Amino acid sequence: MKYIIEHMEQDFSQWVTLEYAQIIRDIGAENLILSSLPEGTTESEIPDKLLHMGLRWTTKDLNHLTEEFKDLQPLQNGRVCLLDPRADQDLQPAETEQFDYFVFGGILGDHPPRDRTTEIKVAYPDLVVGRRLGDKQMTTDTAIRTTQQIIEKGKKFQDIHFIDYPEFRFSKNEATEMPFRYILDAQNNPILPEGMLALIKRDSEQSLDDLL
Image (cartoon, rainbow, N blue to C red):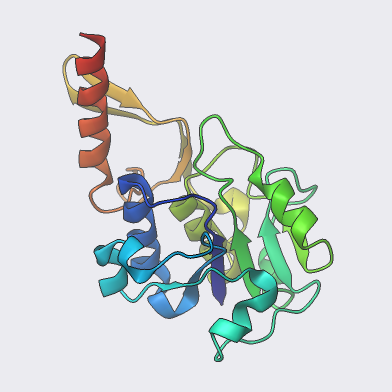
């Protein structure tokens, strides 16, 4: 199964880099494609961490992916699932054979959420079919992890264990609440990308310094 992220940002923040690195660990570099990077993007603008992990990326859009990646199966109308918070039905395990690709825009992980999905729907009206992953905002790695559990592991959405808006406490007086839904691991802890907790702590400390 192939997962595509329509990368709609001008650069790669630390947050995004950690998320993309974790996605590669979870699904394999061969199964992740970053598409629609700004025209003129060069390899020097891609984080070394991601390049070393084998990230596949292109400035081409969904209609022209196979021009860049000859090994890809052509994207066919109706067989590309767009994860859309405004879709009228949730993704189901029974749809494993219905879709070849799953597309994620710059729509998950933003707070407040930005309606990037509409841009994708307008750009590819016949190509994509919308499906939801519940009614809460997720980080991009959580959205792909959830899709993987439904499509590749056959889990129903309602059987996946989530936590909404977890609070991460770093000391008696220092804590940060994240405004997203996360999957819980076997120890009932939110699953975060490697290095993300340290980044959240640094961001929290920086915000406190700004206030002072």
